[in-house]
Amino acid sequence: MRKQDFPADKLFRLELFQDIPKDKAAGILEAGSIKSLQKGEVLFHQGNVANKCFLVLSGRLKLSKLHEEGREAVLRYIGFGELAAVAAVIKENQYPASAKAICVTELVVWNRESWLRLLRQHPQLAVNIVGMAFDRMEEIQQRFLEISAEQTERRIARAILRIMQHTGTRSDKGIVIEMEISREDLADFTGTTHYTVSRILSDWTRKGWVSTTRRQITVLDAHSLILLTEDPSV
Amino acid sequence: MRKQDFPADKLFRLELFQDIPKDKAAGILEAGSIKSLQKGEVLFHQGNVANKCFLVLSGRLKLSKLHEEGREAVLRYIGFGELAAVAAVIKENQYPASAKAICVTELVVWNRESWLRLLRQHPQLAVNIVGMAFDRMEEIQQRFLEISAEQTERRIARAILRIMQHTGTRSDKGIVIEMEISREDLADFTGTTHYTVSRILSDWTRKGWVSTTRRQITVLDAHSLILLTEDPSV
DNA sequence: CGACGCATTGACAGGGCTCAATTTAAGTGG
DNA sequence: CCACTTAAATTGAGCCCTGTCAATGCGTCG
Image 1 (cartoon, rainbow over the protein chains, first blue to last red):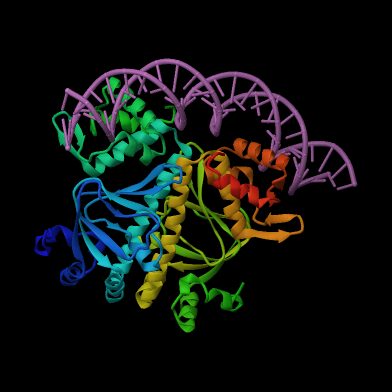
Image 2 (tube, each protein chain N blue to C red):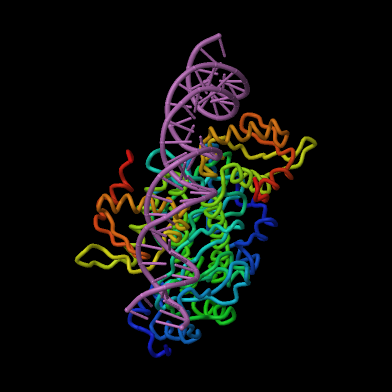
């Protein structure tokens, strides 16, 4: 992809560029370079010093933290228009998470120096980033509450609905989750094991709520899943 | 407390004021007003629109999210020099958490208008806030990993060590955690129940690792607790 | 076609939650 | 200062959810 191929009309409407004139936003984009990742490729490893930050143009990253004994917690999935590793660059910290492409993914990359310069040149950029950071914070706090307070089945229902809202597409058979996600990924996202995820999805399949193939999930009855997340008695 | 009573020397060394000249920092403080809370008093309720933000001068707040069915998850405790409700003010969002004073607490309060004006006047302030937000984010992400991957006893050990580092004071009998914290609070902090916390603290008391009175904990053998958080076999 | 990774399912055990009953400590008001 | 009230903490019994382990099935790709 060349820079001219930016889907400019979509990009300039991002929260990142809110209240920033188009020409300035274009300058911000110009300051970065383009990078492509293959499916499964690692963008950065947890513990490495963060000297770059990223904007996803297409594809998707999985941001996760690794636990000593092999376990992994998925913090979030990062799709079009979202940033990765922003704040760490400002703090010159080690970045405390790993990012891996779950499909072919294209990014804008800025190095630390240009990023800091951009922030100084465009104060509104810093304000927008605070806003985006707040959204991330709210999301992880909400999931922290859920994992503290709720049973596994409900958490899995929430996870599927959440992912569905981001990447689901209607088809005649139901809402297909385009993004490839394994049982293991779902388990790491909800703080359980792939055994439990498998059991619950099998159960839902028997009930006709979802249908699954190898790494794809189709939601047939979203309403039942929503009930599951709402009904206190379940 | 009057504004003149600010412990200026300590305040101006806060991360909030990093790379901001003293006179400007003083101006920022001047733009806010002082508020006092009694123990147990609620500063703001989850769901209310955030039109103020806060800096803790003394005392401590408990920031938590409430779950429909009565459960509560403690997101963090907010002590001297830390901010509350900052980002929500920028986004004009409802604030998604509640804050309650756990002891007599004094704060600086800014309303939204002055806060936004300050951010525009002092771009470095925005940068510092991004940095602070990043620290909060890292902390909650770490705890998200722990609650996903670790057993209850280890999480409780981590919680006590963490709180000890913030508010512990040495005495001849061990490290006393000054901050009053009930079993219930610890349970809400670690995503378990006060029954389990009580059982584990009793166990540690039998082992001579801690001693507890009603709402106070003294750590007698921090090393054993640290081992508990590190040893994979436990 | 074989090999590998992902997914499923059963059996089993145990950690931790729930419920219930006490005990202990801290206020409170006479 | 003591009885009384109330909230916090402790402890036991029981059980259920869910993690662990093991075996098998199934898709995909070289």
